[in-house]
Every structure is written in structure tokens, then in C-alpha cells.
Image (tube, rainbow, N blue to C red; front, top):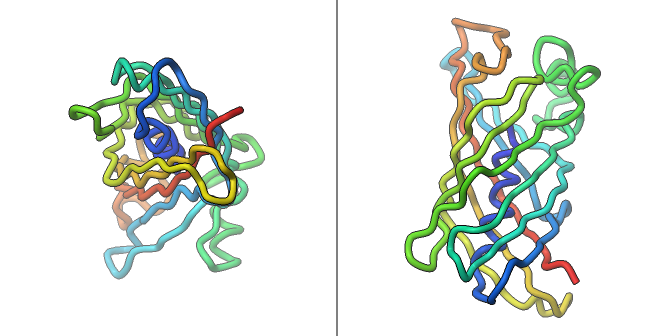
Length: 190
């Protein structure tokens, strides 16, 4: 579900221009896939996953080459509410005992000139794989002043229907649409 946020990481890496493919490692301390879900039309519950990892490979010279491979630890779902976190980890929602991770793998990176603007890919949630496009709303790469290496950051957005992945708890009282907002940072590999 929040693997989309991991895609942001890949987008972050694509911003700076150098020849050839470059590898970036997702920085888990600065990457948080987050989501928003309907609560009976009364409010929206927001949550995030606090542990993710992955690699992004970008070929900026071609403005199309590269790949994103992200894994999110489903057991780190955090709504800021202990009872809801416990419920979310159970069989009716993320079923972390059976499906401990959510993954995202890109199929194509989208550019508008030199700017990375989107990612096509597939998310696997609860053992079901479906297409998951992401829109990149912000992307920037810099030489990090403390790390002395290139670091890229991005914000990505996406939407999906949780019932497509078999997560039907609360339907039809609760809308199945999930909105994603993913912040990601990735560090260029040595």
C-alpha cells in the first residue's frame, strides 16, 4: 500500500544528471510511505509505515532507463493509535503474519524533458500484484553537506482501491479508496 512511497525514492534519484546508470539506496530514516483512508465518511485516518528499504537504478542520460525496487515492512504500520495499529496488523487488514512485506517494482519511469514526473509500476499487497502509477510532485538531488555524496529526495502521490487487493474490512460503509503520499530520500551508492 505504501510501497508507492518507496517509488518516490527512485524519483528522487533521477533528478541529477550524470552519464550511465547510477544506483541509490533508500534512506530508511528519511523515507515514510503514508496513506489516508476513509472512516465512515466522518474523518480520514492517516497512517505511515516506519520501515522501508530498496534500491533505485537511474540512467539519467537516457531519461527513461532505470528501475525501482522497494520493500515496506507491513508490521511497522503506525496510525498513532495503539489499538488501531494492532487491528491493522491482524488478518482483516495487513495480515502481517502471512504477508510481512509490501513491495513495489517499477515498469517505467516518466520524464518531462529533464524532470522526472511519474513512475509506472506494480504493487504487491496481501499477495496480490496490481498496477500502481505514481505522480512525482517534487524531486531534487544535491550533494549532501554532511554525507559528501549525492542524495535525492522526492514526494510522490498515488491512489488505489484496497478491495482490489482483498482488503474488504468495513465495506461498503468505508470507502475502499486509499490515497498515498510518499516522502523518500535515497543516497547514491559508492
